[in-house]
Amino acid sequence: MSAQMMNENVKASVSTTFFTFDHIDRKIIGTELNFKKSGVPGSEQDKELMCRIKEHPNYDFKVIKPTKEKKSYKGLKRELMYDYIDCFGTDEMMKQFQQMKADGTAFATMKSWFLDLFPKFNVEKAKKDIQKHRLGNVKAKYKVVKKNTTKPAANITNLPAASGQ
Image (cartoon, rainbow, N blue to C red; front, side):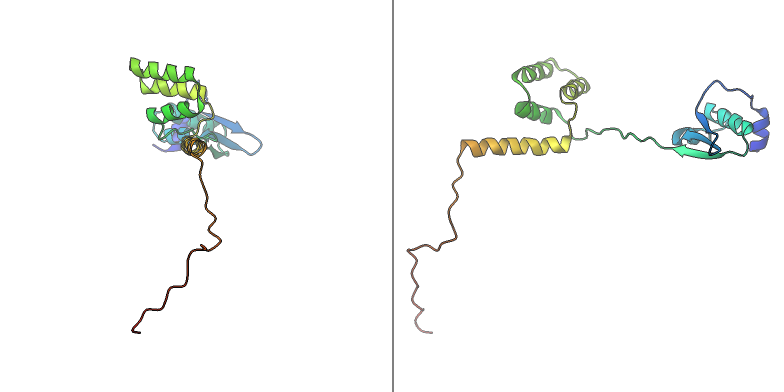
């Protein structure tokens, strides 16, 4: 069945709004996902797109892609949460975390709780921040002594040449 024949079979009104119009640029606008779904004959997106094409047959298409990327927390584990709270959290936060862990709270719930406490959390930055924090504590606890290596030692003398050569 051709697209023109399908256009004739489609009702003039649709109840969904997967696609919109840009009358200035003469385009039918929709998301990439909705255009893909419109490729399935009989789908809601297909019915609506055929209706829109019938209404404005000389319009082109404009695919819009989502602008906001999903924030990924790949690598976020209980151990990292524990370390981060230990370094940058409060005693109360640590008690709550330990209690949830002891109660067997699901990881998704703990993750949501943790991200509510630290909304701008970034896994890679957190790992580096934890290392810096711990290194700073070690340097504060144990004073690092640097030796001046620019001057030669005064007790070194020239060694005699090997005999027999």
